[in-house]
Length: 271
Ligand SMILES: [Zn+2]
Ligand SMILES: [Zn+2]
Image (cartoon, rainbow, N blue to C red; front, top):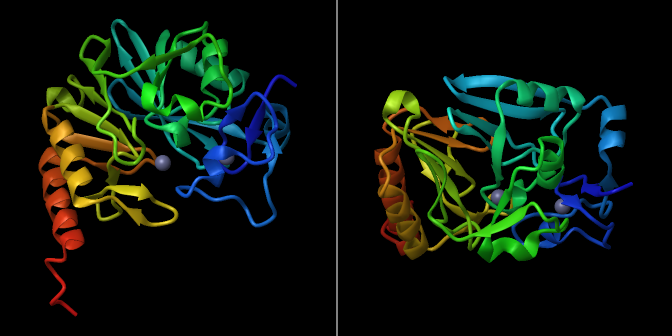
């Protein structure tokens, strides 16, 4: 067996360590029964498969069924110069690789932050070896080192009109993708967990930990918001199929101001 997959977060590991560092971190959790490991072969035997859906022209969502680990939705972004695989899921099989290849050459793989590493190196190996970009501040979370991994700080234009930056917040190197041609030319932000589209579809949240509910400070939220406000975008996709379909840039600012006011104590008089 060439590598192992943490069952809880689905991040690939070169070795079976005592506990997955990503899950043991205060932002995640280790199951009550303790650390669990699996393999691609075991997941295939359990019936895992990859589903691909078109989200809008030139943007596809890949998810595993059932959910592998955290259960993110990978984004496959198509451009005339090649494709970006963003937030790679922690499962793949021959059928998934074939269908991804049919959509065009993947020339770059990147994750918004370590929770979304998935089996990023394995995706690279199966897709002809495109570079796997890892934010330099978060390199220490890579558990399966590989020659395909490229540290970056940014901004990084991985493809024409497709720019990676690191607003930070959720992780020191928490990254987003700005896709200028998305949403019919109005611009798209692929926000990972840096900015989380809420179930009400008209607000977003900014958290150090989503499962363990650890908030970010007002200062950090303002910094993250200013970092993405440099881009024009109308639509925002987070990493579980959740999205803000329009006016997303204004939604981010309005939500940031609300967050900042609450953590500052502006509403202490409310009951
Ligand atoms: Zn884990
Ligand atoms: Zn996360």
